[in-house]
Length: 495
Image (tube, rainbow, N blue to C red; front, side, top):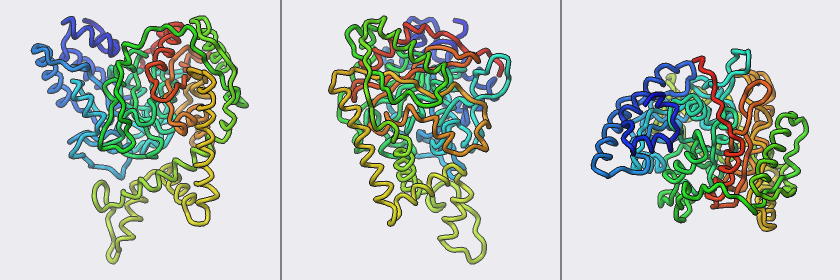
């Protein structure tokens, strides 16, 4: 077969099953593509030897009928997932040289299913960012470019390496994580599909923590069907993660009928934000029409506490981050600063963190420490927790009224140039999460689906939010929208 890297997960699986190609041929094609794409800076730790060993093992397994559901399929892994014996830095200088002696539960499940690891993917440091510019490896670059402009664009963040790799055909699919939109926003920026599952659907064990009550692993893929396949392999209860749900994992792919007749789709009025580009509003209207044409009923709903979501998120997430990142002290693992004569343990902590953490991480740790401090705990952190409960109840009320899914924009704009917000107020960057953070605060599943291009030739996505634990129904609604949109555009190769 030619153009093996252009295949999606489902197509590659079918080609392997039919004997039209082998995992070794597939893996070699991706490794060649990766080597030619250094300009994208998507892969930060390449693992060609591991990839070829697993590809050979997968081909052998297929000959003995012991093939798992992902047998022989090459994937990219976000640098946040601990991979045994392979550098896992979470995009940070402070974890330089760290090679875990264990495997995250999600990647273990993928390897048990027969998947092949191509390497580790770029990301914002500790998943803190919306543009992949806080990475110690430098920014990943979006394979898309504006029409007639060669300026480098962000692939979104924090899972920028994952979205760039999938969009540029450098893997069949990739793992990612979403704390406030870090799967859905990069997917929207790169014309890919990004699925954030219900909190607790995928184990967090072995994933470097940012904000433990918000973090959730999920896939970035080339299609909704591929997202269903990946989620089926990634999901499941894990006794090592106390927040992991003890629920059976359904066959998500089998639930993709495309039939959404009678479904009720809610349109929240609060998502019509000031300054929204007309193109985003037009896209949203088109999404409503596509779902209505597929047989769904479109209703207006209210999520009244939406306006408090961003400030609530940017109190809770930094608070949890400040606690989680306290473990990086230069004593047990990772980077250790050189000490001067007479320096003590406090100097070790301070110098290691000053050297190892980037500016955005330091900013969030300081904000988090502030809101958790004795004089401000009730005024900020406790109040944010109460508002979070109200945001969650808004969604519960909507679903109680019969709404099956909620349609919103995924991002307030298309991809912007790298460095465009370098001198801006950090809040300007945080506004990229305006449509996505509510889903994390409420623990709900959400998916971004590409539906069109803007006037600059860049992809735009719409977000569907589903009921808790009903990823199958959400994926089916997304599948219907994907079919109606017919989005097949790919970035013109320049790298």
